[in-house]
Image (cartoon, rainbow, N blue to C red; front, side):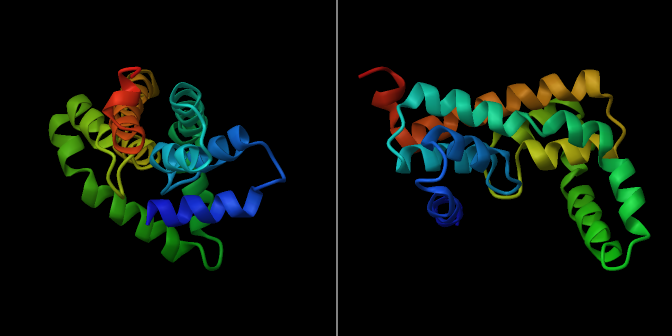
Length: 167
């Protein structure tokens, strides 16, 4: 699914913006995040190191905004027609996934963000951290380390271990 979505975004922007910017945009999107950015980078034949840093930066850009503003945005949208059910679904899904984070706090958040599986990552990790009232000073560095770990895992999965080792 990640490859299909990444490929869709690539085709949407191909020949309109640079390949690097495509990877950055893919990495900013919820669901795709760094996982999709690394896949897009590989599909666009970007070298590993630039792909890694662009994907990391793109994934991290929205995280502080989510941590700071998501509860206020949800509160504002909850009263708007059509948004109430979406907000409720997002909160329920995030809180269902938050059990390990609640129990293990920082370590739980780190593992949740670091394991690059569908439904995990920086966006959902930031949403969970905000919903359980984890302070930004604590959650932002943990999410950043988690995204870095996910980046290393995705580098191996998309580019192969020899590329990561410089061979």
